[in-house]
Image 1 (cartoon, rainbow, N blue to C red):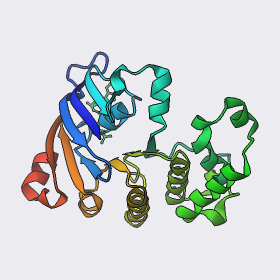
Image 2: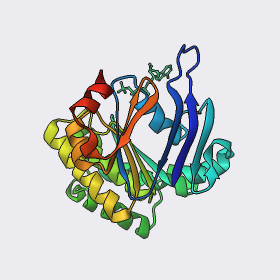
Image 3: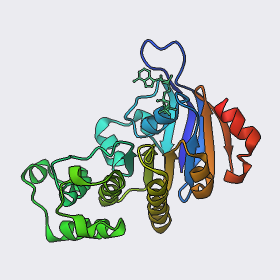
Image 4: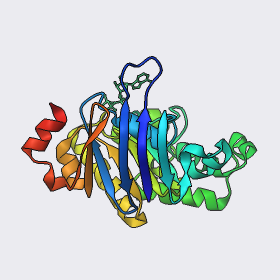
Length: 244
Ligand SMILES: Nc1ncnc2c1ncn2[C@@H]1O[C@H](COP(=O)(O)OP(=O)(O)OP(=O)(O)O)[C@@H](O)[C@H]1O
């Protein structure tokens, strides 16, 4: 269970809080889509959970551990429970699909092995399995800069799988993709989510995709959590309130 209590985030020199006293509890098994217009605080919310952004005040509690007061060493362990899928993929362009995928396990290995690119047979097998899960096993030796956007995002997902996460965070993972490819990526994310019973929290602008795939929708407006409910509760009135 991930509990967010009275979370406030204010960026340096900003006049307003980017997140203002957010309270929400999220559970494993939930596929939560986060809506809100540009600047509403979606990305700040996701990044603060992962502690890429430090909160100004409030608490983030994951299975009884208060992440806001953990040392960096302990946080490293917790962070390995969480993976992030990014809008712009965050891959290493000149490396192959397989090499990029294997970097997902870097946090759990000694740094010298990462630097020298030493991988056991078991680690390689896991990499191939992850690529099979996203349907890219036939492209494993291609440099990622040669792939389409959708293929790149599938590498991002395969890399995330190697981390064996419990929480999957998505910061607009389909914002750079066309509608058909976006749907394919959501289908893959949902399948992986269900197979592993993750807690998935995904920012998205496409309300139709959110309503189709989410088990729960939350929405921000000007840093305030202004909606938390079932996908079919997002009717025209709620939609207008979110995006007005
Ligand atoms: N690094 C930063 N420094 C200062 N202000 C920031 C920073 N990042 C975001 N903000 C501000 O915080 C608020 C929330 O931004 P955030 O990126 O979380 O919104 P968002 O809902 O994800 O928007 P988008 O859909 O455009 O990505 C906005 O007012 C934004 O201008």
